[in-house]
Structure formats: structure tokens, C-alpha cells
Length: 58
Image (cartoon, rainbow, N blue to C red):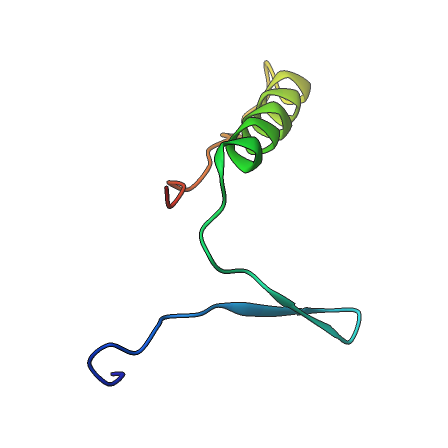
């Protein structure tokens, strides 16, 4: 638990470099995410696999 008024921040380390993942993604991120989801879903069509994506934090 953080202090009152403390900003919640998410970072991710990729190849040893810290990338700040805040603030939340904008609509462009949602478009890219949706396109990737559609490509994977189409590629797995007629298979036993299910494809889903998490809720985006907008």
C-alpha cells in the first residue's frame, strides 16, 4: 500500500533498460493491441486454441 497522493507507476525492464509504462496507454496502443489479437486469432482459426486479451486500462 502506498501513501495517500502517491502516484502509481509501472516500470518494465527490457534488455536491461528500464521503460516507464505510465501513464496508461492511449488509443494508439489499443489499435495495435487489437490488430495483434486479430492476427493471432486468425492464425489459430479451426484449432483447439482460444485467443483472448486482457482489459486495457484506459
